[in-house]
Image 1 (cartoon, chains in turn green, yellow):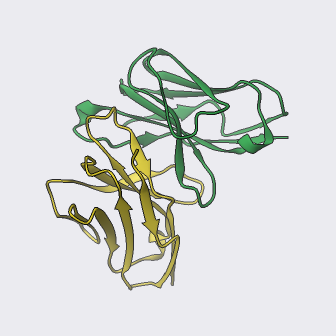
Image 2 (spheres, helix red, strand yellow):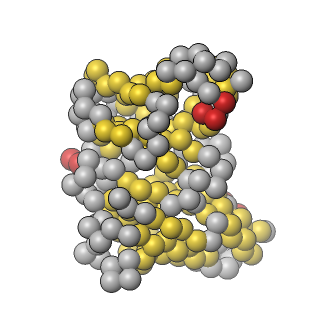
Length: 114
Length: 113
């Protein structure tokens, strides 16, 4: 069974703080993704990575950066958190070796920026 | 880039009725179309998918149809049950594109007992 875990389920930060969200997967997946989920807006892709140290911008990368130093771990960084970054953040992973593009999601981190 | 539109945004049906959710996509190169179900407070999980070389796929009470010419695909749930209540997301992707998928905005399905 694929397992994708995220470092926190709930997080409260103050405006201007640097925030780290961590995601770990245990199935040796090449691809990893960060989304934010807001009501009525679906899943919007922030960044994704298809290999260690490789990253590509998604649809809404502004205000975020990512790091992938190891294959199993993909970190999302908010350099200076703002209130409009209050959201649910979902990490996912996938592998072309599976024969499909099925994504396996983590449980999510609900971030509140005050 | 790819654009996926999903309708309706909310859907309410009586238990036992059928439910249909429709999606359209813009990039004719897309060739993989998954559907994810997200129950309240839980993570999205794949329930069914279809590839562009297939027109229809069924799995018990769930079916997906694909019309490549019109660039639309639909999820059909028959004999709905209260446990089908959830948010459903469609997505479109190109299988060679590092697994990147574009998601629809989601449909909140409520099945009334």
